[in-house]
Each structure stands twice: as structure tokens, then as C-alpha cells.
Length: 334
Image (cartoon, rainbow, N blue to C red; front, side, top):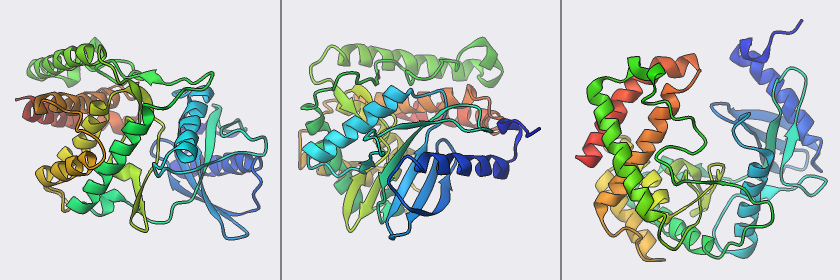
């Protein structure tokens, strides 16, 4: 009898996911020559080469997090941006039936997976070139995205979460729960409680304002590809209803944690992003302290995810993640 999927080695899982990838690709009008795995840290990502030389990216989604309708809503928003705006985005590819999402189930993989196919982007992600010039371009693209999103009319059945909570609305909140008490000291708990209070207060005020729109919610430098000098936005999987300052908080979190490493400079990079943004739209932050609170919110999201994970590697990393999150939050919030 074959081993259960989650008892397999990484190599064993990959073989079964290749089988799923081939099954999925039968639903597209492609003559597939080769499939190569590119990533497996959350979704399974495959490069697809066809006999005519065209390349694609196949994303096989992580199970039991996003519904098929949520995946379809993500594709609808990307397709709308591609068809109706000048925002440069990765282009989804419809299947033979015209749908942008295919739900696959194969023997040996226990859960159904929602799958999408994208056109290939030639180039590297923006994180490979952490310069003021690249972050200024990113700021301009972010402003375009936020401006156009105001004009988006959701189609029937459109379904994404609303980001009006201190933690990711998709995740169970376990950071301060009894089962995680061994990971969080009293002093660390106090830091988290203070941050949660500040985030909740800012969210309550923010969600009374006009301007609610669909935002990317994972707009960091590794989700911006650069093709012939043109930034292209990818990976809209975490799409939510929210406000521009929340998106910028996510962007700045990743600039903040990279500060001083591999050519990153937080003061320079954040200022460049702001310049680029203001070249397109007014800067949506009136008080820099508010932005720091939304940067800290991302730290809360991530530490809560890590301590709540059943993955043994995540559990081993959890104490380090807790310590890092506390340090970052205290730096941001004083």
C-alpha cells in the first residue's frame, strides 16, 4: 500500500505533485514538453515548457485555505486589471472550458487543490536589485494599483476576506492562547498585547473611512517581477478588501526587516517608494506612526502563523520567530 502523502519524503511528495501537475495541464490547450518544479514552500509552483517554445507557470494551491471561489475571484481581479487598466500584472490563462481555475484531485494526494496557469514572465524579481531606483518604480506601480482598484466593480460571486482584524483573517489566532504559552514569556506577551491594541484601534478608525477597495495584501519586493525594466505585479493570492496604508505597511515590513542586508537601506528604500507613489497619487499616510502600526501588524501576522503551524520545522523555529517579532515591534512602536 502506498505511503500517505504527508509521510513521504520531500522527493516522494514532489513525484506525486508532478502527477497532479500533468493531470491539471490536460485541461489546457497546450502541447506540454516538460514540467519542472520551481517552489514547494507554500504552493507548488511549476515551470511548464511547451513544444512551440512557449513557457507558463502553474500554481497548485495549498489545500484547505482558499476556496475555489476565492481563487476564481483572485483571477477575476487580475484579469480585470489586465483588460481594463494599465497596471502591469501577470496574465492568467483560461482552460479549455474558459475557466481560470481548475480544481484537481489525484490518487496519492489527499486533498483537492485549486490550480491556476499564468503566462511566463522573463526576468528577475525586484528583490534582486534593492536600489532606490527600483523601489521608486515599485511605489509608482503600487499607486496605480490602488487608484484603479477604486473603479473595480466586483462580479457576481466575488469573494475575498476583509482585512479589518489584527491578524490575518484566514488564520486562527493562537499567539496568546494557552497552547502557545510555553513560547511566549510574560514580557513578550505584554509587547504583543500592546501591539494588538494599537492595531485594533487604528483598524476601527480606518474602516470608518471612505475608500475601501481590493488590495494586494502581499505587496513585497519578491512579488514584483522586472521584465525589460518594467515592474510586473504577481501573486495576488492574499487579496483582501482594505486600504492603501495596509498594503504599504506590508511593503515596508519587508524593507524594514532587510535593512542593512544585501544592499538594502530602509530609510533610502522607503523614501524612494514614497517618491514613486507620489508621482502617481497622493501619499495615503498622514502620520508616520500610523504606518508603523500597520508594519507591526505584519509582524503579528507572521509570528501567529509560525507558532500555530503543525510543521515540525516551523515549531522548531517558533521561539526565534517570537523573539524577532518582539524586537521588531518594540523598534517600530517604541
